[in-house]
Length: 362
Image 1 (spheres, rainbow, N blue to C red):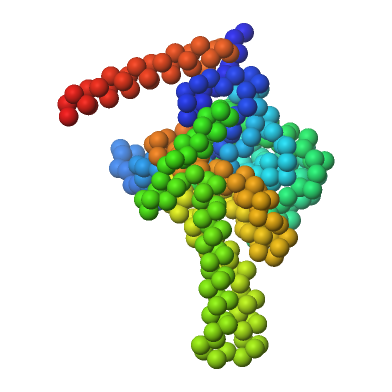
Image 2: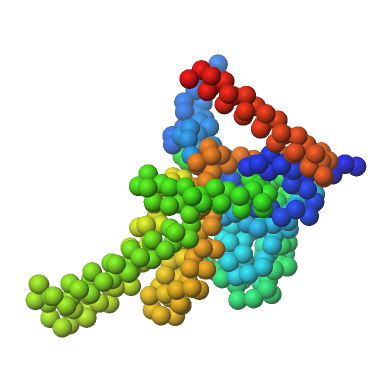
């Protein structure tokens, strides 16, 4: 039987067995309010397809970060859990589904119409994860696993999720509490890295470089400038504050340092009109705190911040290339990427023809 491979949503190339890729769970968007419809059976309400026609997340909304994975044929994936960040993002995505996905009941077709009840599955098949997730609330801190002892449970849960999503059996509430399907968005690892490189040499509306390292250094410079300004104001003390008041004010330096850093980084999100995964953002905030407190030097901070902010670059590049989050489509065979290469050649030919036509038309 021919292999069932996947098509990269960004490049159109084939993702085959053993290929590194990124997976994002996406839920279908919806109108802000239900639409009323008049039919011969009476009034009906139905959510519209979307509430926007632009931005990467207009039709399908990401529910996870770009999780590292290896494609395993027939729509299955194995997560790559190489470090603490990989595990934190995987746990966060699982927790989102555990809290937000609806319970799907078993249907008439015993093979295809499987039930989906993630809390029950985790409790029965991943007791270690269940013990960690059960008492958590939306206010709980980021869950960072200390080691790889729960990797097997994480893989088991994500294999279950991918299988049921592939069978179109997973649903979440969207806007106006309308039920929306959950699907997978797949990008080849080389396409993910290529999207991030799209910002090299690019500039934003304010003529600032969009390249991630430059953005991080600019954010760091803004945070340090904010601290220098606050310290200079305390030295001048134009309001005649008491020593106790000045000390209390200095205790807010860390908060202002983080706010100034975030204000610059948020402009990168504006480029894509979409915020990245909340876990990566919160871990970046923690790294900023560690830098300010002297528990992390600048070189290690920039390295960590670069990794935590990579998805932001990819989202920004998706917006610049007008790429949207879309459900995965599958390809029969093509393990040598023959179809992918032919598709790329087709697009290149049409691009030349269209560009030449526009140039001739003036």
